[in-house]
Length: 558
Image 1 (cartoon, rainbow, N blue to C red):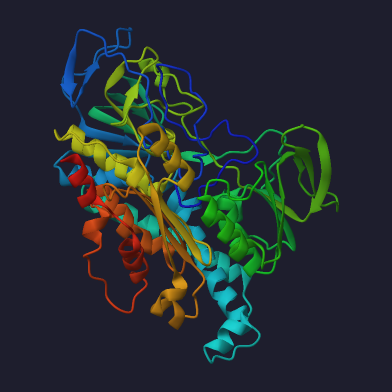
Image 2 (cartoon, rainbow, N blue to C red):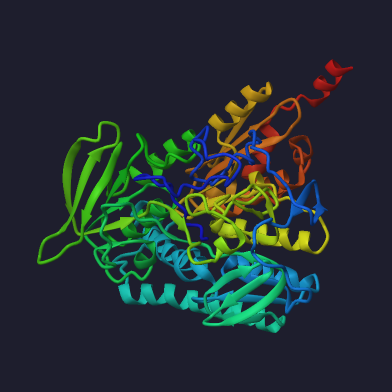
């Protein structure tokens, strides 16, 4: 999955959640849709899995068991050590790591190598956002004059911009293919499905066996009922990335990653934008303080208006000279409110897992709202609550964290396990970013989530902040608008969350996310050295401003 992952403002049947078969899904304690943070990330209680059966082996702290159903017996010898169904970023990352571990590996792809991220997501969208960033800067007379630069008549060629995005996707796709073939990974073409234990079919009638299998089939745009997509005037992100035309006025349904990034593109290219959001505020998945700042910086100064607390219950494409018609309904009362007439509509209501036709019924696995149920080690769970031996699911298809780099990290974690080393990915340390101008990034908990966790576990939290206005490099770029926010435990120095809005925020977040992944505490980060003058000093000042009382806690303990 790509970086353009939005909330689902119209409806949330495919809202990411931790898939568990022991109990039906319960409502999330907070709004977690933006980052895909799940119950395991927040360390909330989980139902227990049943691990039954006669033939079993212990992996980590679990026992895997063969299903008691009549699904056939696994083969005694295998064509491959590992077969991966799906060649997106997750499957590709798993394949490369498998080769490094000495596993004979095959990857099955029924569409094109690279999946959503490379072909219809993060890669082409970054090309469009690169253009929007340049256009936005060149059109800002005040910004240019402050730097002593005179520019006039900045414009763009729509087809050339679209070609830039397409060519970039093609280049990255070819790079992925070359990297797989160079390492000896077999690329098998055709739709893959599971026939039984350790047995996979691809294409028409090709059957192979593997010691271990990874499902990495990704997701597709989710379109709520009542919305008619024609691919021209009513589009999903798949269509919009082709930039076949730039409408004068476009409605964007959903104000998450996808919607916000596309609003950046369209307004820079001259469009007026109207957001339609089901919840009472825009960008509901952001940390509230960052969300307010983002609205002030990214929404209010631009040609953007919005309707919150409403559903787009019906959208009809433009036809016969008539505009796109959008019927709005109050999200609470369900009463019809008004009708909008626009030139185009972008449906940015999130993603739905692509898991149909995988043959999961052959191994007694039932999806939950389309997601394949897995445990914390990405091992697939069947309808009886048993762990299915040698079968894993990563990425958007399991719904734990719908981000491309999370899929890759999950794939690497699975390869570690099948290579004999137990590994559990800490999803709370996986960063996310929104590539607007300026950018937004985050890792860990929002402040409300951290307060909820602190209340439950009976500890206190503190918040530290620093402004880009105090950073020399940001001021040199005349880009002082921005904020970095740290949420932490003052008694231990543990980082609970970091949120950044500002110049190159997507690059800055990794110091915090890596610290969280490695368990590095703030008192140690205070001693780190950062080059001057660089934007990294925003994080340096942020950590130095935190008040950690570890020594006091030790004295109390004594």
